[in-house]
Image (cartoon, rainbow, N blue to C red):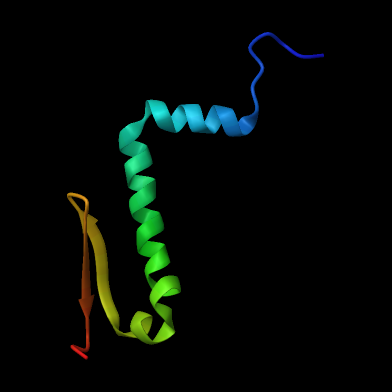
Length: 66
């Protein structure tokens, strides 16, 4: 039996993030930081000292300039 206001869980989550743009932005920042090591591989990841996002800019500190 379907209710009048029924929606899928995916639609509810999508709607929640559309209404909370700041939270959505923070989650995207976390995804970028987590993807750093996966995209650039283990060699670059082991030399990564610090990584963060500020004002929509990704900052990365490495222990090796090479």
